[in-house]
Structure formats: C-alpha cells, structure tokens
Image: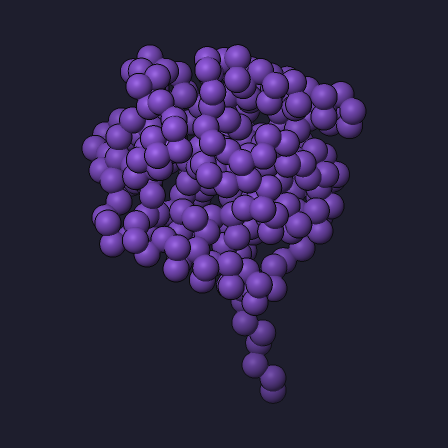
Length: 255
C-alpha cells in the first residue's frame, strides 16, 4: 500500500538528485526527440498548460506540440515566464479563471488543465473556482501537500523575489484540498526538486496518482509523461477511468 501525505513525513530530495536535475532533464529531452510517441485521438476540446516556476511557453512547447498532434486544442497560459503569484492569490488567479471561462464559452466544451510543478497549483485552484468549465486536472510533479516543507523549489522562489511568508498554514490547507473534478497527479520518486510524497493524492473518487521515471525539470518533455497526459486527455467527457499502462506484447514467433 502506498503511503499517503497524512501518514508520511515530507523530506527534501537528496542533494545528489538535485544536482543531477539539469543533466537528467537534458536526457529526458533527448529521449523525447528519439522515441516514437503513440498517437491518441483527441476530441478537440481546449487544454491549457501552466508552466513550472521559472519556466514559460518554451518549457512546455514539446508537450503542446505533441498534444496538438493528437488533435487537442492546446493553449498556453498566456502569462509568460512563471515567476510566482503576485499580491493576493485570489486576485492574481482571477484572470486565469477568466481565461478558462472564455475558452469554454468559445468552444462550447469544458477545458482540461495541465500544470507542471507550481503551475499545477494554478490548475488546481482555477478548477476550484470555475469547476463548471473544467473537464479535468492533470498535474506534473506538483507537491500540493508539502508546499511549505520537503522541497528545494522554495529556495528558487525566494531567489526570484517571491515572498514565502504568505504561505500560511491556512493557505497550505486550502491549496492541498483537491479540485472537485477528475484529478491525476503524475509524480516521480527520483524527483530532485520536490518531495514526491507531497505530490501523492489521498484515495478518493475520480482521483489517481501515476508514477513515472522522470526528473523534475524534464517532466514536460519525458516521453512517458507525455503519453500519460495524452491518455488522460483522450478520455471521453464523463467517462473518466483510472490510468492503465499500455502493454507491448511481442509478436508470436513465426512457424
């Protein structure tokens, strides 16, 4: 039985994993360039991608390109580089929610939200604000249950001018609550930036945790991650089912 956030202490990843992140991310990118990705047939519904802290449109470009090839209507979050929220979180998130409402109105279809790391927090919070417009949420290495501890990302946030003192216990509890829509959390035990245990959602209805073997910085380019995201998005609306990995069966020997 996998540990749940409530029963597990959150500790930061070993420094060895942290220092290996840039090289591992490069290897994840190379693997994506060399490996053939399966085709999933999307229904054209809108998908919004939220980048991780310090990343932007370039960081999610591979994922956007792949999802577009699967016939999803893919949209960047349109806020440039993710340097963290500014001012009051509720007010800062309002334009993100309005963006999703506009896409839903234009397309006539509910919108799926995909967020990487801190971007996953945005996706979850937007879904809580406008659940009627959101089809599902997929997060990549988002430590929603350990934002105040067990992560190296907080140091990066502070270096970028962020104010971590606003992360009060009450706010942490708010952010840990999962959205009222189908939710998939993709995590890696070898994540060098955040506690993988903090990414794990407690059991519930229409919620799942999918383990991959990727670096934190390479989450948006790793072939395994891209396959999982496309698989989740390709489900028919109202027909959500837990993820099942494809099994590659060898061809029978010739006689």
